[in-house]
Image (tube, rainbow, N blue to C red; front, side):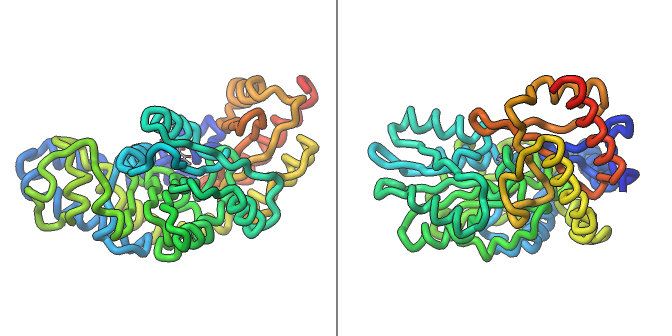
Length: 380
Ligand SMILES: Cc1ncc(COP(=O)(O)O)c(C=O)c1O
């Protein structure tokens, strides 16, 4: 499987989660779209691209099991979250509730916006260890207040690599008239994702992480009721120049003046890649590596996992004891052993987070385990 990717073989690459990695056949198609543009720019923009985008979007809608009318491409999850947040009608005395494992840039955005717009942004503290979805839902729900107007939650947390039970949270929120925004940056392609089973108002996911498309491809799903409330900051021709292949939502959100659509188009090829190589099955076959890592980390760090295995996607984050300096650890792994693996943090808790992708091998895991043992002997 390593042969299918462009990754430098000298690096043990255990951080698919941060930015993904695009397979060669998908990357070649991505570049071919850029060449097609430069070959005849007017024909590309005026005639071809809307139809090509329409096909890619329709394939993505099938992949996610949603109506294509409720789906649009965006550059990344950050763009989608900003777009939704800036469109919201939340004001003084009202709050957006999230949890303390949200992606740092999203928390930062909410804090900035809350300050400017005078609403409250609050993060529920996840009680670790997590033993069941029900525990998470009950604890989270106990923190919902009458002023909670919006719930913003990661589907898979970036820092702690936990799958959160967002469908159940959305069901409860809907019953109480609370708006839900799900940040699924890591979800599509990493876990089975059927959006028809998550009754949220908004869902964003990155295609350039686990779906394996080119960088700068993500999607925004908007429920039918919420469509009218979305107000993009960049307004271009929109539905005034809607071509065959476009939906109204896509026309409003995707066209932002002249731009490179190649990454959006590569989503179609990434979906073909998943089908051709039966990628779900490939990931399932690698799952034993995650269990192996769980045991290795527990033994080396002498701490217990922060959640039971049902919470584990294709990433695993293990809490570092205070005796391990997170900066030294990250630096040593990369500089002395050529191992690319992130150290993440939630408040003062630090985690070593591994991603297992189709190209991850047993040998990669052994190299990591040996490196950690050596670092432990020398520095801890
Ligand atoms: C949970 C979560 N949300 C949002 C993002 C932002 O993704 P992007 O940089 O593609 O916008 C990330 C990135 O890792 C993430 O983990």
